[in-house]
Length: 110
Image (cartoon, rainbow, N blue to C red):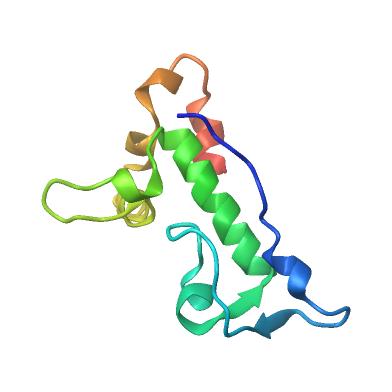
């Protein structure tokens, strides 16, 4: 997988004293958009944070957000990661090729 960091620039549409805005024009890549933005056009600083978080999950897992499915319950990468986390199995998300390069305690911390 070749990560490409590009524009997490949704927050740029804010005015000087605004912390969130509502837009009728929803654009972006499905899988990286927060549900507030995708369904309601609500943009805040959290919109960019969500997109960045999805990218981090992809880097740690070695999987694309749209290509991760559980055998019994089809989930996207975010749902799969959340399920593993609440079951106390978060380290199972980590790409096996990262074993020798990572400290497990740091992965769980962040």
